[in-house]
Image (tube, rainbow, N blue to C red; front, side):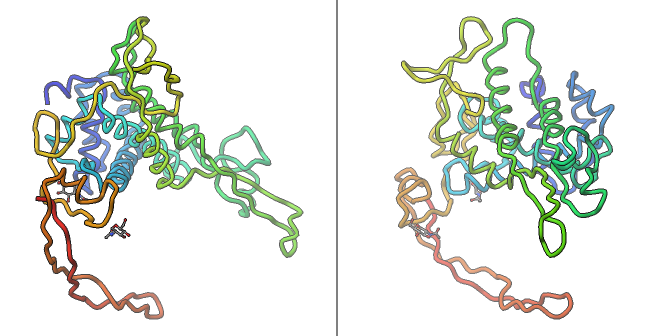
Length: 340
Ligand SMILES: *[C@@H]1O[C@H](CO)[C@@H](O)[C@H](O)[C@H]1NC(C)=O
Ligand SMILES: *[C@@H]1O[C@H](CO)[C@@H](O)[C@H](O)[C@H]1NC(C)=O
């Protein structure tokens, strides 16, 4: 833990706490574990523990999405304690994605917490007929409108909680990279807000229309960040200690929504404690696919074996009025290809 615990950001701890156990969502235990870390996070623990619960939910949301997006890849975002810690310590593309998706998850979850009325500090963002103010807009007061998502609040809290402290003057490149990736994650939520409207009036005549903003579905956020992962920029620190420069000639500098990294990833083919690679032995692959999920790429050319796996599944489910779903248990056989 030494090296990690000394880093400013408590991301790893938070992730492990939030994802490792479905039960630990208690802000006190998160805050206790992070006592050694001074700064903004400690402050938030003291003053706004209820936000910390939402932050933990957000980290979990982020890692689940990471696992979904990377389910067919060699590195599949497994939270395998020691190995995951190693990943977070490096400046590779995968780390960039983890930081971004976590910051996005926190933005999303805190904002959601506001909309659901779980937080006192924030609430529904008022509808467009009442721009500016917080709290229920006229639509909500009348009970006819939707609840607008106050993404600014979630954005700020995510920033406050997740961003490492910027050192005065020069910053180390790692800090700059983490800041950039966190911001890219938050913007993948904030810059894609949608407007939803509802018509009121006699038989939908729309004499009165209320509109409110809605966050994108988190799956969309994950999809966008995966695109950014695929187009991530390799960077190095500029001389001023404040900027990141793309490596290579004539490459446009990354914009705020791009993911950045400074080290090439290992190939993740074989287990390696040093790089945090779990290896792909035993992973199931698709023998007909030509993309990253195909056996050739996933198994790194080592080959695969076919195996029939038998497992039980709910099936023939029936809905009984009201409101029970009854299922039978079926035994399912599936042919799987597993990497050697
Ligand atoms: C991810 O990889 C690990 C290690 O190879 C494996 O145990 C796990 O089942 C994989 N997860 C998914 C969703 O494929
Ligand atoms: C395997 O890959 C093929 C071709 O890309 C695809 O059509 C098929 O659905 C995949 N199978 C599974 C189980 O994902």
